[in-house]
Image 1 (cartoon, rainbow, N blue to C red):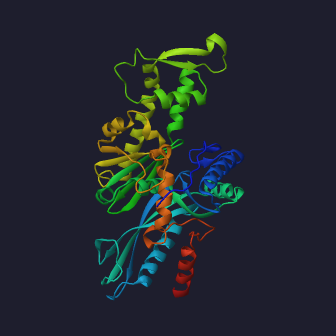
Image 2 (cartoon, rainbow, N blue to C red):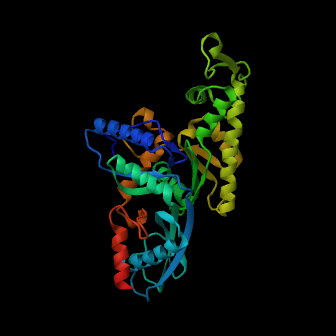
Image 3 (cartoon, rainbow, N blue to C red):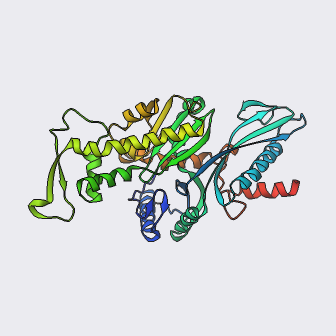
Length: 388
């Protein structure tokens, strides 16, 4: 796959993955789309969106269906999916299903089947990973797309998209934790046996580090972001006490506008927030009961993973082998856009390439039934009503 157009704008009007200022968010989206269109010399009408707002909740649903010993075919898989989706709707009442992804099959109670078609058995089991979100934030995101004259083909939970572009097959099979350090939140996903089996969110991200710097040093958010990017670190260095950093004071001008601080002071502000974030991730993994399943590897991605020292802190707090994940298998990414900050957008491209398969079914809520971008869910719903 080759990238032919890139658009990049500051995410105005968004907070923790949720639209909080529709006009500002619309301006940002329109700007990014316009940049990509001009570079690609194409007009964009349909988009895939990643979503990390709405307090996502992850749930595994297991169903079994009788196949009477015959060869498993498409009809059997659809019947199992339909049963799982009915249970999913009941268990997520008051919320909207964001993604419903098959996470493995069993035949007569034996797990490990990734492609059961053509096999024989008495009972077919399906494990469906369902991610739901609050209704309001999802509707606001859809409204934002409408205002930008964009049609949404699918919504994809953010860490799933990031994982598709940064993880290698062996990691997904053996067990890995993906940690997407975004601006407004930190998204977590656990992959095992070839599937994503859990996702969670910590409402702390890189913007919180920026705000801590702005408050602690009495400077503007823009200058705080620059200080974090150019001089920030999550680990102390031997020369930090002597290395001086210039910090513009907010609201002042002239000779008093600049203050000189040791770099150690900046590190002292950043380090506690990074530790807090990673400790929250560790506690969420333990609470999920999947800490052992998640394996000994963790992959950091998102813009926050670029901060010096984050990898070392993650290895210590999580007690895992940690690497920084960058988009894999894509050509045409500029040097500025091939890092972990663009893993999510790159993952959407990978998702778009794989979405026709039954393995990557994306459910996007539409009233009480749902809407899959290519109409699969509507067809499955009609099929279920006709046959049951």
